[in-house]
Length: 265
Image 1 (tube, rainbow, N blue to C red):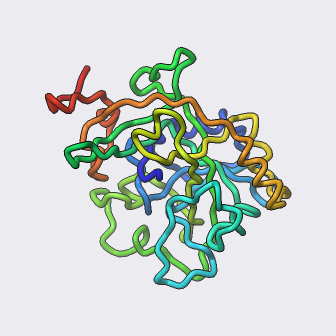
Image 2: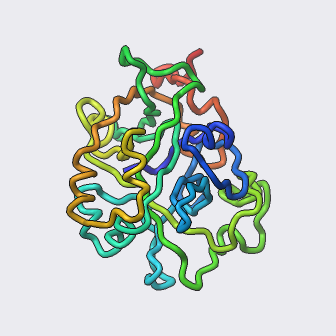
């Protein structure tokens, strides 16, 4: 699964990278993006303009009851079949920009060691700290149905409340943002030793068909998903501070020595 990621590219960089026509609101870069928070997404609007938008991470289908638990991930192998996802993947696909993601590895002594995974350099190494390239995770979304997300708009929200609009610097967000989920795939090679799943990253050559909302054929979508190559990622062991959603700084990406319990320069 993917339960935390980073998105520290600024809006100007995202606009240029994704050929954006319309920008919705503002969003501060994040080094610890967590479920239920407002996240940056890229989608095609009904007028065919490409939008850099804001969504709530945790898909809630429009038909769902109030008790429905938001879904942060959808498996690539079954996303075209599961009732919670099949309409969204057919009609409402998006890209979710990320500079990398965190995963927790179960160790022999029962601990959970966090790792940061980002796009590898051509020689297979991790990019310099804080210079990890922006990637595009495959996402799906749905619109709320008479649903106002109290977690973002309720009383008691403020700049010190993790996940609140104020804490993330979001301006002019929609009152009822769409909800979204990240599509995941089976982890490849040694990455599977950290966790058996990883996000489905869409290469730039396939952004156009992925965001084409006239492309709705389930079998064609299955073929498209199956054709997506595994992104070459480089893992970096990081410290336990990422486990607390209140922590959100570049220091979370620093290499970590678990034996010494020290961040490495």
